[in-house]
Image (tube, rainbow, N blue to C red; front, side):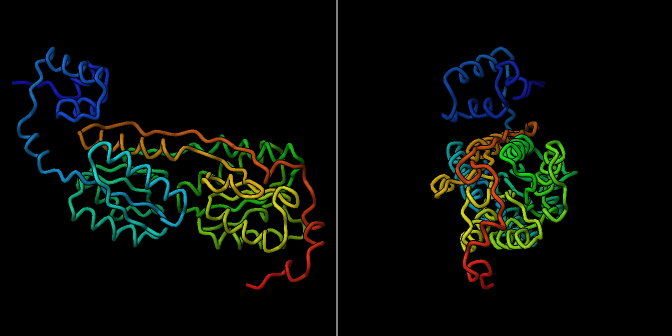
Amino acid sequence: MNTVTIKDVAARAGVSAATASRVLSGNAATSEESRRAVEQAAKDLDFRPNLQARALRSTRSDTIGLLVSDVRNPFFADLAHSIEQAALAEGYVTLLGNANERADQQNRYLDTLIARRVDGVIVAPQGNDTGTVQQLVDRQVPTVFVDRVIPGLDVPSVTTDSSTGIRQTVEHLAALGHTRIGYIAGPQSVSTGRERFTAYQDAVVAAGLSEDPDLIVFGDFQAASGSAGVTTLLQLADPPTAIFAADSLMAVGAIAILNRLGLRLGRDIALVAFDDIEWFSLLEPALSVVAHSVEDMGRVAVDLLRDVIDGGRPESVRLPSELIVRASSATPVRPVRQAASTRPAAEQHPEH
């Protein structure tokens, strides 16, 4: 009885199980070097594909599901595009669902994807509600988490190590003389919201800056909460001279209200956003950001999912982050109250 598996072939060839599977199934999306290594390994080990497993594979739909948190968020729009293109290169078409930052909408989409028998699912999960996500695991639907995770669920993931970029941001602002940095945090029900908040708190302590709890407001990764956060922070008796928004949409809301108040980015107040999107660099002034590669995140998510589909158990991947300094935070501190007091009253107190 032949007990050699495709994982044995992959190990001997020095490639992933996913690559070995592609070569042996005739998929052209492999390098010549990998193809030769896999074919030689299969010959050396006398590997014979499991005919029953091959028959099961013939029932595949060549379709994967992708559930993002909010299609209006430019980060997730870029991520969806990256995943779609990487999946197409692997021979899969992508069915896209939008959770709209809601667990109930997430679960409705996941139920539909399960019913449609997709070959696998890539999910940016909402909160800590396992719900239908647990059903994916229980039904052995190949699943990968992207950007966010649910603690306690054994699902491979590709996420960002936000701590480096956030520490760089706080150190950068401190070097310019900012001692009171306002932070618009994401929802604490979401892993990215919690991780970025913890990283921010750690960085503030390490830099010896003010730990005033009034400098922290909590948003929901939506633009309106970014605007509301800025309004709350600037109404403090001692307002911050710099603001750090924990995602791109909240940064958009922050920019909108600061413009309405007549405060000039990079001169009257500093602003930094987590997540870089293409047009942030085109603003006047350009926006400083904590960047991480959405292209890499999408590509790795598809690679992990392909490995799971082929029976592998890949390790999770953490991608790096880094601060990109642009004009919105490049000048030394200036008291916000002084700048705001020079604006017309109608601009200082906009209608809501």
